[in-house]
Length: 192
Image (cartoon, rainbow, N blue to C red; front, side, top):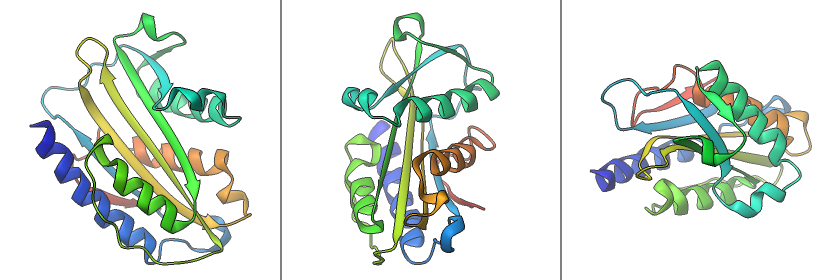
């Protein structure tokens, strides 16, 4: 089930990123946000205590990590979770990652990490003056390590613009990613 879930997500994310790569950016204000979400369905998601951690533990030392984690914490709190500082206190963990780079680099990185293990190829355009930002969030249970909700959001903005700065980009991406939570599983949407 998980393999089919991830493969389907891989194909949908590839389509989303190819759309983003062929025309998403609209200048300095940032482009639309492409969002893909995947969940196990079933009964509503229990919103209890949740801790936020980076996918890669070394990212906790990145200068922008506290701001990124705070943005995700605000969204999760808005949705009804109680965010706690230490993972030992929560049954749920929100794993997060943010990557920025050229359109091509982000498309390649995204394709390699879909479902954190399933690969796909993503066609990409080229543009030296566009910065792409990718936000990934996976919510999993600590007890059995099941990822029961996962989402990715990608946007583009003119390199050097305020919209391309990590804090601004993450705010836009998180807002789009958690809009209408949990969202339709396996469907890619474009959020303006």
